[in-house]
Image (cartoon, rainbow, N blue to C red; front, side, top):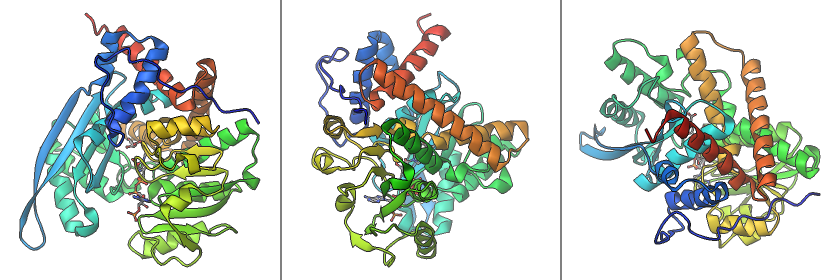
Length: 437
Ligand SMILES: NC(=O)C1=CN([C@@H]2O[C@H](COP(=O)(O)OP(=O)(O)OC[C@H]3O[C@@H](n4cnc5c(N)ncnc54)[C@H](OP(=O)(O)O)[C@@H]3O)[C@@H](O)[C@H]2O)C=CC1
Ligand SMILES: O=C(O)CCC(=O)C(=O)O
């Protein structure tokens, strides 16, 4: 079995004096650590370095919402546009209690690199609102979404900035966003948002696209390592849009999915979990697996340390850390989530020969089908699920191979290989557009 790429250690701080303090839980710093390694490998011009590390614009907005009990509450919302160099900016919106501006900045930059890695003609953006939707009624979430959209009406637009779903947002939230934008525009503008319902211009395959990309890249990694899907065991952390679909599709490819989890904890069955039953259970229980009896309970920490072939973290940032990376026994880590592995954990996984399919590649299926959705909306011509999935698989395979080859060429990890491809592309476009003029 070939050894995964080893060299992934930053040796000197070329670009910043003094070297920045790295707060290991700050996603933007964690993104920058990887960016620095790739920039150094590319000997990136320091001026370009400064442009690429800085978000183009950060919008922060106060969102007053009348709650069901009549009280007025004010939520804080963000939209960070990291880059528009390759096209209109693109990226999801998340609603979560721990959303903060540094997280959204990191997620926006990851969108820029992700779009460049898979080759979709978008820049990067991300949005978020600090709120806990699990404690809010549908009416409260709708009012929050509509006010957030209205406050950012000049930011969004099919040729400017195009949102999509992320954690705790879904097709319904995208439908409210579309409707609010369209009310202000005085026309129905389907291409302003992706990940919306089929009935109002959504695409076949978008809901499953991120999990599908995780499946495709995992199979490509297995082939490179000489592993067979029919003999592989898998553990998936997070059972939302990304995790549940990745689990289902890997199961369909013959893998045995022995563990899944959500915030209620992990669920383990050595004979393989019935993913359809787990998904049906979660759908009936307010999205939660709590009480699912097709498996034994285990903690999320225990799930990460299971003796499986593939570990797919599909929940949130900073799950594989310096503290637990040494316990990871999987041969492949497929990052369905954004930023699930800290830089310190990366070094440990690399040292232990684990092949990490980085987030900006593994979870890029979502934005790829979002691109297809945007194209279809603009053409007013809609594709079959089969066409969407074939094109998605082709793009994800192509991107996987380019990243794998870049990692070999630079004798580095797939993560740094992916950053190298992305930075080269965005920096090349910047130069071509004459940023220095
Ligand atoms: N949706 C998309 O198209 C894309 C999403 N991503 C990324 O994938 C990740 C998941 O997004 P998505 O599936 O859309 O989000 P969802 O909100 O649909 O699902 C998130 C899942 O993670 C679980 N979870 C949250 N915290 C933990 C934890 N500490 N331990 C275990 N499970 C946890 C949630 O559990 P519970 O439901 O119980 O809260 C839920 O099952 C995020 O990082 C997102 O940025 C990346 C690309 C595209
Ligand atoms: O589909 C999109 O436009 C973006 C999805 C997203 O937010 C992500 O890839 O992290």
